[in-house]
Length: 314
Image (cartoon, rainbow, N blue to C red; front, side, top):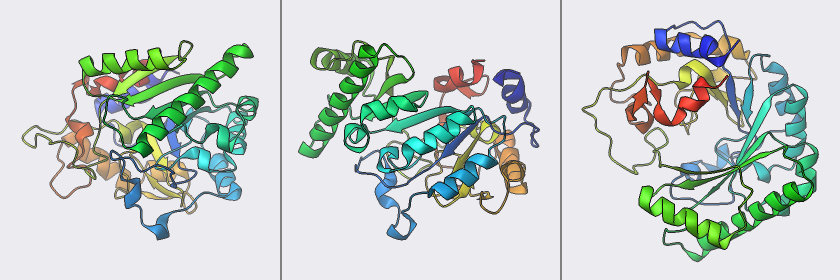
């Protein structure tokens, strides 16, 4: 059955109790990070909350995933290559038939794991997230950008040399507007060997559910119905489950995966109440969703334009 029939129809019709489980789950194997980016509130996570999952915890979570959970993003608030058991986690999920994505700053790739090891049990997709090269950078950020892109070059070269295409490789860059993005793309192609990359994408900033005041939101506009409560769950490193990857601090916590099964959480009263709020588009000031920029973005059939592909692909 396609994602359209399983997820789009319940979303468009505003169903509150869902028969099918989420088709996408984020598993935060660590919330530690080796970078300090202005567009990310990771440095606001308190020391007593910083942790990484054990193999035992991850195994319990992976065994709890319903069969119909098709995609797993093996990251959330931290850098996945900081976890020594990352390759084991990928293998566990691939053996269960899951589509696995990694999102990384790219600086630790060769330092943490040899590229050859990554291809032994590869994720389906890996996205490198880097600063826009046209931004004025500190020395640290210049080193971050160059190290990440050099590691990306090595990854692409190995894939080409071995004539394998097991990993879809993409580059995501903070957008500064069409004109500047075009210049940035030319700069990257002129200075780095990226000819065989599968995708280079420029994405606008977001405010992590209102936790970063990066831009103003038009509060006079009525909120759109958010898509996340109809297709996604996020599991924090401590097992806390929320429905939104923008809910950086778990203010919409629905339960804990180590206490309740995923399907119970997916159709809990908290989740039903959240879906009702979004169907009615009745998000009041003080609610964790109120200041989120995501529900103010342009949509088509209530789906944000930048995410149409996710929903309409088979």
